[in-house]
Image 1 (cartoon, rainbow, N blue to C red):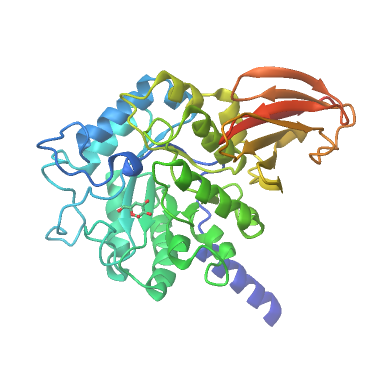
Image 2 (image 1 turned 180 degrees about the vertical axis):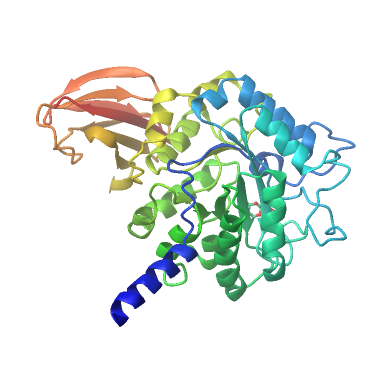
Length: 407
Ligand code: GLA
């Protein structure tokens, strides 16, 4: 009897403390300002690019008007630098009045009127990373209620200006407070990024019960070096990171920087291919008003998005790594696979890569597989397990294959 009661107690306790909000069964997709627009608050001299309701509305217009929304890019989020320097007389966060004159509720309403979702940013600490008021242990419930009243659909909670013990209390407390509002609010936690991203300091089981997604490594910047550094960290620590991901709980290697200034066309393909194989959030951070047709074509590739959004939600893994090549593999629903072959060499010439399905460890369907080159939009043909697959991969480039079994 005692054991039975204890079981019930533990069961209830687990339920009360777990996130269990039913959200983000596939990785979230959308747009966030941070990597591209940073903390630009100079609306006087740069009215079109400063962090303001004008910018957010403009991006919502583009998401809804240029075919993004239909493909699944549905969140338009704020990041840092939206808040006023002080809380209001009731102790609530409030937006900067010059840059958000209509208030956040009206902005969320506008985003919703376009059929999109709206996300906001705060920080589990005294101040946000850019120095605006943060969420302290005392204000968690107020802030959760404020966000819910505004119609927020996602909260990113950063981790500057606090310590490990405050974060260990604060993130689970916010998770419960968000659930208590009764409004479905997806919860993005930067918690592990501030604890080195690895056990024993990071408990990925607890994270999966507390947050829907989490940043666990360095901020992405607009360069190949930054992108490659993140990919390598994900590869090196995949045995820890891979099991943590699944429907409703995602590793977040940070935003897509395609359409910005730093990546070549081939390097842009590397980021989407790897992010699709990693089941990573597809949050763009670029200027959707001026994005090139080339970048847009990469980001709007339906087969690429199909892979990213696979309902099994299994994060892919790096299966081989040699001097030049890395092969990454993600199992998908119905015996399908995605394979990314990346050439990380920088020596200027496309390099031949010859393999077979069998060598790639794809052995389930003896009849073979149809192979599609996702990013070049080509059907390669049907291959038996021992047939030679011969391709060339450009330096700092990738080939992304989609495999459909013939069984
Ligand atoms: C941290 C986060 C970034 C961004 C900035 C904002 O660096 O990791 O993603 O939110 O803060 O100041």
